Amino acid sequence: MEISYTYKGKRVVRTGPDTWEQMSAQQYIATIRAINIIEQEPEKTWALPVILLGIPLREYFGMSMAQRHVLIGYFHHLSEFNDLPKDWMLPSIQVGWQKWHGPNKRLTDLIFAEFMFAESMLERYYSKHDEWELDRFISILYRPKSWFGKRHDFNNKLVDERAKQLTKLDKATKTAILLNYQGWKKHLKKLYKYAFQEAKQGEKAQKSNWLEQATRLAEHRQSELTTIKNTSFYEVMSNINLRMKDFEWAKSQLPQNNK
Image 1 (cartoon, rainbow, N blue to C red):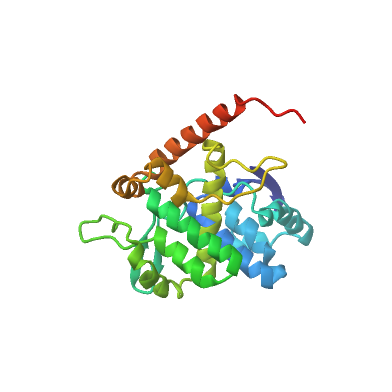
Image 2: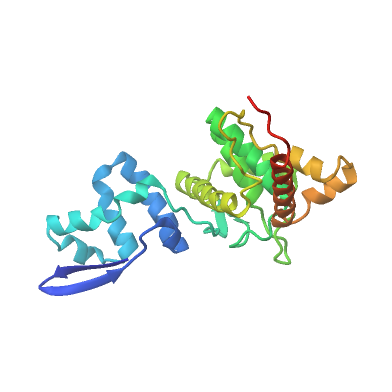
């Protein structure tokens, strides 16, 4: 997005993101922090054009009120949280002295067990509105690295231990991680539309049970189920999506009952 305005008689042209997905990682977290503050102090909406257009404070406050109002108006739509980023924006987070590392930009290093447990924690968070469940969700995605620079493997038995430390993580960072996950998952629903399909009219809606899906994929063999849990998320999801697609096709070939 290109925006122009007049400052001290000269035309100034600045460019900035029009959507969440277009933001850099620095703009993304800074905007989340600003919106959290604006919720309590609406007069601080001035921060958004400064962050997203890189306008120096002296220049911004040297403008007329009308000019500032126009600039703020360009970013009102961000509070609707549409077009959230599908790429992972926060590669690491700081919790006290400890630095924890999340998935890579495309989340190609995610295994199916991580996704399965993350979905379970989020479902509890949405139903109970308990921040502890959000902390557990974040502790699944973020882990320390070893001395050799490799992120620790996922271990669900360590989730609660890490979550206790995440109670110290600031609200803006927690919100940024949650919104990023929502943006990524929206992308997944387009990529794997059969695995994430909604209930059709007249059918009973069912929540996705990813453990059940994995169990079916493993044909109820425990050793195979363990392998699937530790397999790349994208590989497993592609298989689930293909099976669901085949199932939908087979269902469409059945004779329709005449009412």
